[in-house]
Amino acid sequence: LYITTAVVFFIILSGKTNYIYFRKQMLRDIDEILEGNLKATVNLIQVWIREKTYLVNVSAETIKNTIGDRKAVMGDLKSYKIDGDTDVMYIGYANKEMVSGDDISLPEGYDPTIRPWYVKTMEKKDVTFTEPYVDASSGNIVVSPATPFKNSAGDIIGVLAADITLNKMVEKINAIKVYNGSGYVFLLDGNGV
Image (cartoon, rainbow, N blue to C red; front, side, top):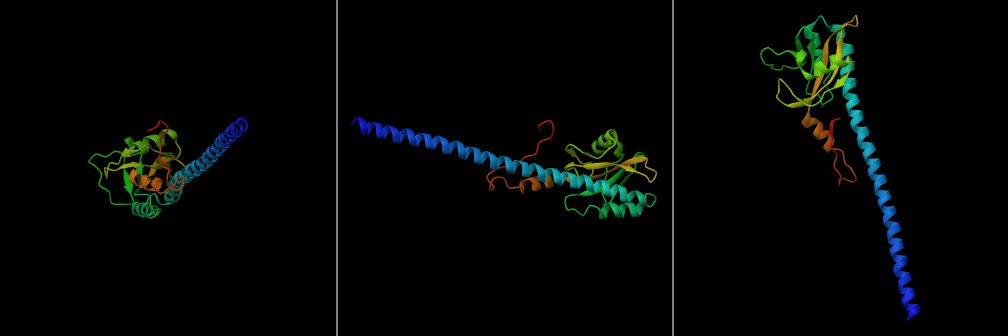
């Protein structure tokens, strides 16, 4: 009876030890997979943001050569929003003039120099990506990659920006599959919003 009890106790103890070991190993493996998925997801979002900032930078560099020709500038702005994510590309000038590649309707007295994309970019004097804000022409919530717009002499004369609706960003983020589709991706700003 003592031997049988000892054998049963040993089997139970051995089974529990194996269970604990394999459970810890499985949890470590899951953590590694999730961490890999997280890094890949962060990388995808960072690449997407870099693409948008690159798009506005290249557009600004190219368009500065046609500054005197409003129609050419409008054509260039329209042609550079070919990426499928950009709703509209535009330039807000320091003299409060606004030029867009698309036919947009702006409210009476519209002043681009007080808009979030303009203010943030002029403060930084570098490429920026805005927080979400309400677009003045469409009423949609958008984010905007923006860059200082310089003339051929290198003087900043305004800001070139592009609108990307939050809906478009949500589409992009929802298309990312995490852990075989059982996980979710969400995007937060630096303030956790």
